[in-house]
Amino acid sequence: PLRLAYVIDSLKRAGTQTALLHLAEGLAQRGYAQRVYCLNAAAHPDLLARLAAAGIPVAILGKGELLSGVGLYRLWTAFRRWRPHVVQTFLPFADTIGRTVAHFAGVPATISSIRARNIEKPGWQRWLDRRTMPWADRVVFNTRHAVDFARTHEGVRDPQIVYIPNGVLAPKLDPEAGRALRESRGVPKEARALGVVGRLAWQKGHASLLQALALLREVHPH
Image 1 (cartoon, rainbow, N blue to C red):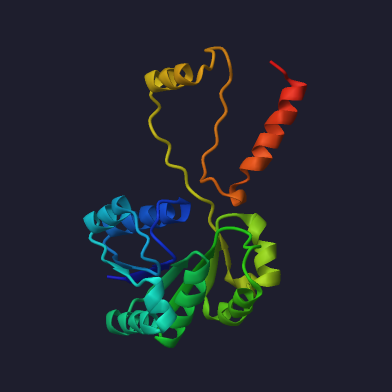
Image 2: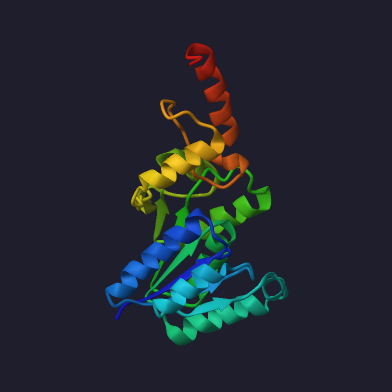
């Protein structure tokens, strides 16, 4: 079967990690052989358990090994021995490190992913991105708003660009749970309730949402 290796910064519970999990679980059901290489020792037990249940091995390298060079050698050796057909990288450090190691290990195809406008990246990392980006066969974006920034600052070329928006797995709604939540927050039954899903980080735009809600309240006080 086709062998796929994923390289990711960490396996903490967050959006990119969830996207990787859903992708890996779906491909496991289709018979693909997969392995995950995590650069950081931070890994959520639930994610590890679900990957294990899908029969997907996880190797955790750790920052210490990467800084010493041992982690890079371990990753290169793993690629040379297992010989994945495709390496896909997730998150900024994994993108830079993963495609570089995959290139020197002779992996046939490499896919990087850019999931935001990486305006906080330091200059040295953007310099590395521009020099290693040619080693990616494709670069997957989940938002079109990040494409122009990546072209200008990260060295992405038009033939590499693939746009795949995030999928949404809609849970079954429980009316009783909704009513209980309203009551616990003191929200009247007739009031409209708005929510947002995302970790508490500036990049998710919670401040912009609060500002917009404040303006909305001025226009529609009730």
